[in-house]
Length: 140
Image (cartoon, rainbow, N blue to C red; front, side):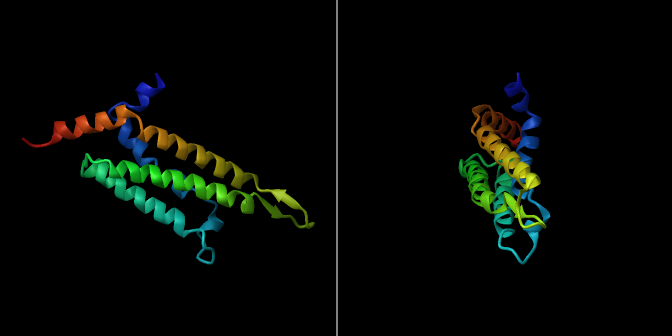
């Protein structure tokens, strides 16, 4: 039932556009220009936007935009795992280490959502319905 719902004709573009969310959701401290953490989410978001334009606007039937989407989401998971330990705790006023609950929740939620998007993009129903939509709207 859930799979049939998420592969419905009108739901596919919405779920595909939601791919930007796990790439862009970071704590505000990440987007300071003094850190080097801001450029990777920006670059992966750019790759995702390029792919979405190719798939949804230009109705490109080739495989490379789909691979680029999966690459962006997979690299998001890898980068979040690499940044997990340095950001998982911070020093409290007394000098002890305190777990950063908000960062951990954001990291695991976005990794899960990126894994969902990778799985979603590999569903044959998604590509078939988008291909059928693009063939139906092409001028004769």
